Amino acid sequence: MEYKDLVEEAFKAREFAYTPYSNFNVGAALLTADDHVIHGCNIESASQTPSCCAERTAFFKGVSSGHKDFKAIAIVAAPKGTEDANFDYCAPCGVCRQIMAEFCELDTFDVVLAKSVEEFRVYKLTELLPLAFTGKDI
Ligand code: THU
Image (cartoon, rainbow, N blue to C red; front, side):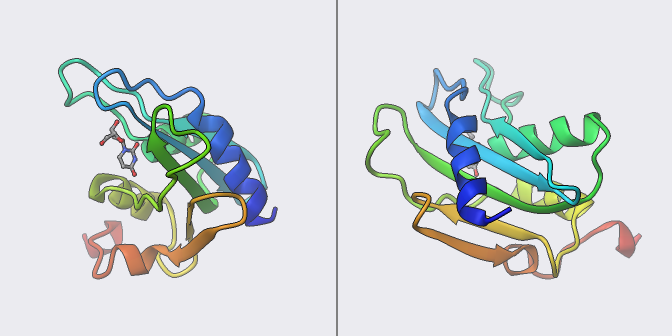
């Protein structure tokens, strides 16, 4: 699958974001090794801590439905109500990077940050999480 198509899927995933507190809507599309696309959006809670980022929603959906090998994730984000403008690159938070490192190879997994289907940047996970602590270190 081309990354522009994965970005398009992330935009679709973002439509379901539940963000009554931040009004910041994030969508993620996770590509499995066997080319399934898993959508994730951010889901917030009034007590904040239980909130879940779009990226982790996608990983938890994937892993809990039997997927363990992943190739890439596309991420799109913007405040609610700015659907046609103001999409800026949104890098995943540290907690999500650590979950990516749990299931993905640092040197091969691609993180696709997108403003639109035409404008995106691709990073290897190792660039976003250098000197990662993983299960291999235990
Ligand atoms: N958020 C994500 O879903 N992914 C990111 O990469 C950054 C932040 C969410 C968490 C929270 O619901 C909102 O964006 C504001 O922090």
